[in-house]
Length: 326
Image (cartoon, rainbow, N blue to C red; front, side, top):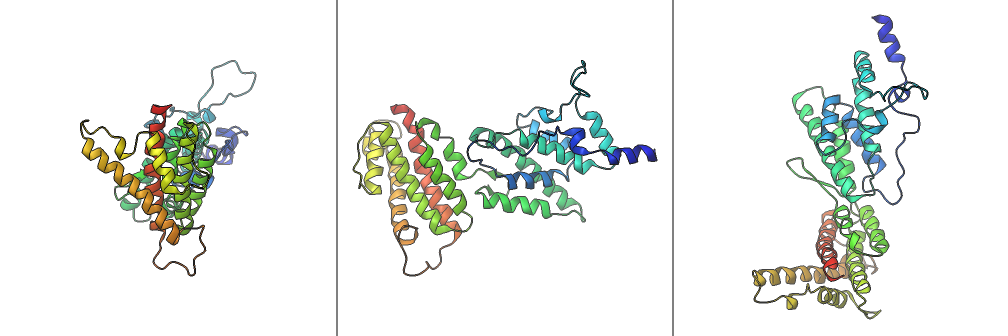
């Protein structure tokens, strides 16, 4: 038994479970979930059981065994692919449960296209479950090291994700908005603004406010361009917003007064437009683009998030309406 355990401990985990070609993937485009965030998820998963890690992903529609865990004994072997179950048992016997759970979580995360909004949302459900399981164990066990969970929470917050009091992880505004960009023939400009917003949100409210206003302007111009509607090169944001809303029949004056719920819809659209007006004023007072005489007093990161949320609400509704007109 001693020899068995010694041999088990001497196994190279990467060679046993993961092929040498598996690495953190570098996908084209900008991922919605950074490499640092994925590594924080892996650290959390390392403290959980194999069954918990696998179930967190399979409940979100992932395969029971990620492709990276399949291997053949040799290239010449004619038998069916063998799964890592035997290696998992070996690692558990050697006291390496943590390493095996870590490898399993990493294999799942490596297989996700993090530049896809839909696939990122699915994986986010698994991340939420892993964090909940970790924090539940931390609450029940006195000697539990809570640092991995705290580090993951900090990373999620830094990248624009919100965790509510029930432990639910809500997507960043950039992730939600990107799912609506499919209606644009050229979303590159808006995606660039979204990347700037993601960097600004944690600790630069002035940049977040300025970028939120730019997001509304860019969306309005993209909508008008795609619909073939000319607009003045020097038009300010309220003019662009109204032109884009009228082009998509989203302005309150475009609503049929006899339709069911018309009064409520008109009021909601009016408030949506009003948010863009207030955003333009906020940017003039606090945002980047105008050199202030002094640093704003009382401006906090939450105000930057508020500006981005307002911009995202208007932009998402406009982009969701675009396919109806095209």
